[in-house]
Length: 244
Image 1 (cartoon, helix red, strand yellow):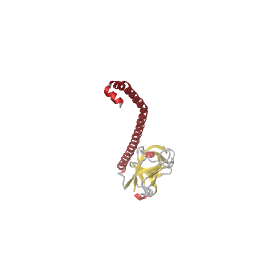
Image 2: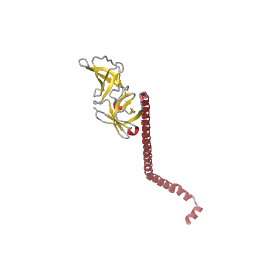
Image 3: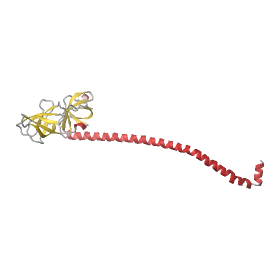
Image 4: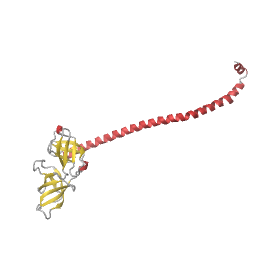
């Protein structure tokens, strides 16, 4: 009450006290408070930035996985279309299948494909890739089938040379495909196409296997053996066609 009356009579001392005493003290208190609360605000901001960064990283990882999945689907679609174009000239109904597994044995490697008896497959059916014979169906399951590759050492395919019409047997092995049992008196040359002969009834005639390369044996024996070249990379097969 008295302070109020004094302020009304002579306000100057109060104004000077506020300007040079109270206000500077208040400013110092404010600065100290800001200094105390700044680390807390900084910590909160850092936590918020860390949370935002984690969310962005998770979103980025999701996008990367989605892009990879789309690229894989696109690649498989291209492989399927390419397979249909290359193998489409082979007579007979064809079923395009995806390779979903392979055995580790080097001497007799087999493939597992995603088509089976539910799709009309039968044992012994010819399996081709890009128009070339790669194997035969060995076992059939409802939704899958095991394919025996012609590169196996125990694979024998009756074959015929397109130009000379000499017959022989194509066999697999560690050194690749070879054409055996060709009479030594036969005139054979490099680059002759090797196709299935159809003898024995296991495989239809006329499926391309490869081309003759160099002679491996034959100078002092009754039969010649020739290397057979094929453009197929059996270790990277992804899509094949199965003749039904």
